[in-house]
Structures are given as C-alpha cells and as structure tokens.
Length: 378
Ligand SMILES: [Zn+2]
Image (cartoon, rainbow, N blue to C red; front, side, top):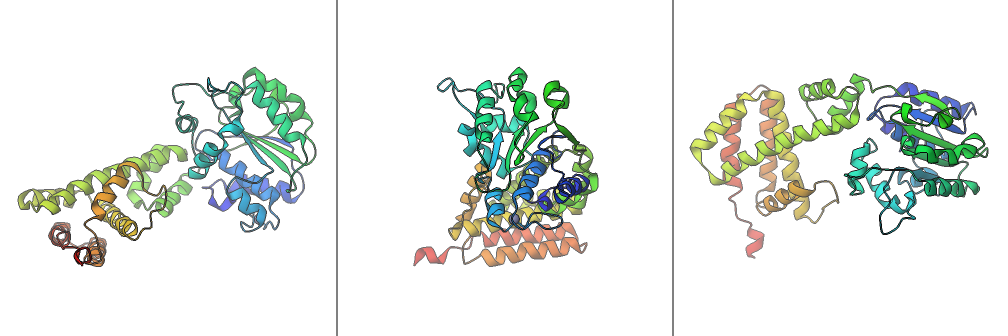
C-alpha cells in the first residue's frame, strides 16, 4: 500500500516520511486514531516506505521487489499481530494461523473495524484477544535478523486487546534491535497498558478531513456530489462508517433498479408509468446514480458472458441477480442496451425531462430484453 492510496491524513504522511528521510525512526511507535481514521493503512504504507528499495520524496516507489511483496502483505520482514479467539480444537493458536484471512480482510478493506474482523474470523459473538502465547511468538519472530529488507517490522493492530499479557512484551518494546520497527495501532489509547504506552512514541491520527472523504466518495465510489455530502456529514471523519453508508446507497439503487427492470420485462404499462413518475421525482443526482448503477450491472453481465468474472467484484445477492440477468444480455442487444443507458445519462445531465427520458428508456429496455439470442440457436 502506498501513501497516496490513503484517504487524506497528509500531515501524518508528511511527518512519518520526514522522520525516515532524516533518519529519526523510532523503534517503537504507537499510531493512535479512532475507528476509520486509517491508522492501520498508514502503518502498512509506512512499513512499505521503510523497506522500499527506491523511495521517492513523498511515497514508496510501488514497483520494486519489496513494494510488490508489501502490497500483497507477503514481505517476509513484515509481521502482523491482531486479536483473535482461541479455537477449542487448537488452544495453541497464534495470529499467524489466521494470516490468510487477515491478508484477505486487510487487502479487501484496510479501513476494516474490529467487528468486521471478528466476522471474518466467524467469531462475532466472542471476544478477540492477544494471548500470552502470541506475545512469546512475537518475541521469537522478531529475534531473527531481517530476512531481506532493511527493517524487520511488526504491526500490531489493536494492542488494547493485550490485557496484562502485554507485559511479556515490555523488554522487546524497550530494547528492540536497531533494525526492528514495532508499530502498535490503537483505536483506544486509554485501554492500552500504561507500561506499554510509556515505552512508545505516540503519533496521534485525527479524524479524516471532510473534504478528503468527500473527494474519495466521488472519485472512488462514483457517488454524486449530493450523496457524498450527505455521507460526509453522517460519517464524522470515520471512513469505515462512510463505507457502511455507501452500502446503504447501493442497496437503495439495487432495490429501485430491480423493481424497474421487472416492470420493463413484464411490460406492464400502467405500473411502469407510475414507477417512471416516481423516478422522475427522486432528483437529478439520484437519477444519474440510478442510471450509472444500471450501466454497471449490464457491464457486469457482459463480462460474465465473456467469461470474465473477477472474484469478489460482485458477490452474494448481486451476483445472483447479475447471473440471472446475463442470460438476457447477448451480442444481439448488449451494445444497444449500453447505448440507451448512456443516452439517458446524457439527457438527464442536460436537464432533459426525466419522465420522458425514463419512459423512453423503459420501453426500449422492454423491447431489447426480448431480443432473442441468435447465437444460441445456431
Ligand atoms: Zn519500492
């Protein structure tokens, strides 16, 4: 992960980069920021910068061998520790036993929160913990020299779950070897043992600036200005929360789109007209979003039909829907479907009458989805 992939937090980025460039790297650090501020993402980008073979003035290169391994979280000198729960079947478990799930979770979303992580471990009703055995394992892992990087780095996520076992780590935290960097990433400094706090250099991470969140929502999630603004207001600088709210917006679009498409299929004139009247009232920003959502669903159908089904891009319920719909999308109509949607977007953006635009689109879609797939008959 590179710094530029992290939302906002320019001051923190500048600060940690400066300490590396001036060779003032503290061996034991605590990144302290509330949920959704990006502490874990920053720690990972920082680790990548520390071991980058060709660092730039303001970021890791993203291309060297070390960066490539860091980007996948598989660099042999990058270690993680995090809360987990001891399975009954194996009371000797350590965090490394859950490393595959950890990599999946963090690569999928470096802004994940504690609850999401427990869900990933399928232990959402239990309590996560960083055990004494885990602490001893960390000491063992860090006792070796760096394997290939300049630094051996440990990122411990949520040290507030250490409990008194954390005291096992005190000697390590106090005197790590010079080429070891330990970064503890906490969301709740008050719950971290005082004995640990006193041995770390604390870096406070503020909530993410509203403008930065807004830009991310518009640029990374294709939200409209209005929707982004509403989520910024509700998320209070917490990007995890913003992501949950984006999901709501997507769920709304999904419901609206499916209802509309069903009516187009069934060609129920009266109901369709009343649905279109409703669509005409939701406001131009949401109309654009509705159309963009439709475009992305049909694009997905085309990809599936062409055998391109990237893992994880659509999943669950949406994947079921796309798979069913893709049976009606084929070479005989796919181009026209996309053109009709793009045309509708064009007219809505230029203040076309939404009733006319949506009614026109609905009729066209009803016709296009009935076009038979000739290639199947030959
Ligand atoms: Zn690099």
